[in-house]
Length: 117
Length: 116
Image 1 (tube, each protein chain N blue to C red):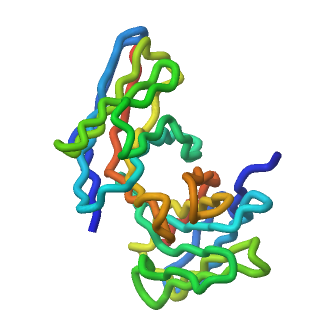
Image 2 (image 1 turned 30 degrees about the vertical axis):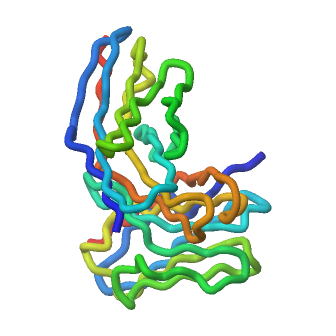
């Protein structure tokens, strides 16, 4: 079974600075996806960024980027130029590859990010 | 277009009562997932529907939990004889298809269930 671990229950960052959220996972599969989701107080889960395991290049989306270390099974999220609107719970998630049906998401425990003005 | 909708937004019930939670997926999405988020926890998978295939019920925590999806669209999650440990946010997600290339799961706002 796949597991996802987020070892930082809470993190804080000053506005305009950079913060990195950590995630490790365990799987025996070679084809999978990794995701970072944001959940503000509204409860709406919002996809921030995704990474395909077969791609060596780290994904980036504007101020958000990942450091994907496949051998170490590590998948951290870097938020640059942090904004007040980035404050939320962040979840790391794993999904089996596209050739597998029933591709549920397996989530970590989450990291609560606070952005200080 | 409209996103995934869920109702009710909040539900308070007494221990032992039955509850029904509803999910309206995005039109045309054939895959539908239910997840549960207990207080301070990540999301855990409950059940998955894909088209007309038999649902994957492997995440349901007990036989008090059941779900159906009528006409390949709306889904209802039913919890019978609710217990206090059922208190959680229940999230629904849908995707346009499951097999083949990557398909993003779009989440609804969830239903917060409180069992007194």
